[in-house]
Image (cartoon, rainbow, N blue to C red; front, side, top):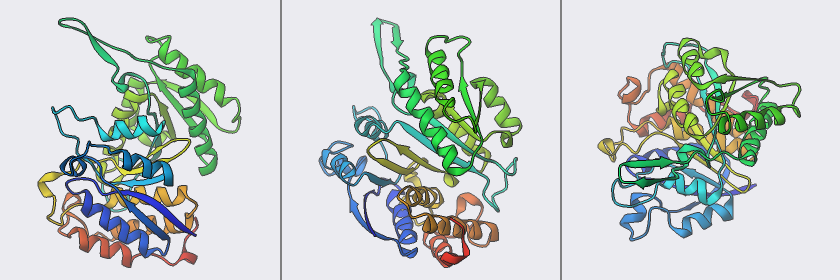
Length: 340
């Protein structure tokens, strides 16, 4: 089967890590037609906004996209591409798997959790205004519909992947109506999944427990702003944003992305680490049913990092983006060697 996928190369190091990832995907033998579109500074420089209509239309048509890191110009009235994609395509669930990578030494071992963040509302949606000069009001809007559909996707994900515990993160003791509604919606959904344990914990305690022992967590579910903060904290537990994938999922489409920045200081120098986008592409392949190819990519990355001979500068090595990509492709296992 041939898949058509929208490709957003991005800005800064985006085109380099995107090209590396495309090479790896194609090396698995999966048949993909890439529909390359502009977003971010590349789109602005082409005389368009940060998120052109044709880019959105491509993702709507193909229902799947792979996105490199994108720069949003600061202080010039341009809207965030990430926020624009989530709102325009109703990508309601941010999914961030966080897993210890072999050979990447961190304070904690055996971390394996997934952060689910509601993407469309809450404080991070940016609904704010100035009431009078010097007084700003920010609106935290929580709806049962948005809360329940995130919870349902998280429980379904847990069911698909064999996970058995979901922790809902909140501050319902203080924000009794907003976080209280979010928590209640999760409890209602949990009744349909009696074989998956659900508990809840205040967000401040979750932050402390993650630093003390992240291995106690399995799946974390939370509203928008909490998720924006804790997903990056969790990435730091396993080596940083350069080694964790990300996805934004909606009912009619999905965008898989590297969640790190565009690093303009090393752009064009063949120094960037493509691991995060490669892992995101593996998530993408699994999402479209190419499970064996996805696992082959993950195993290849694990083999290279575990060996420790070929690493980019951010991981303590001296390899170029090209050298690292070559090594990962060479480490791809045969299909019969992996379990999808």
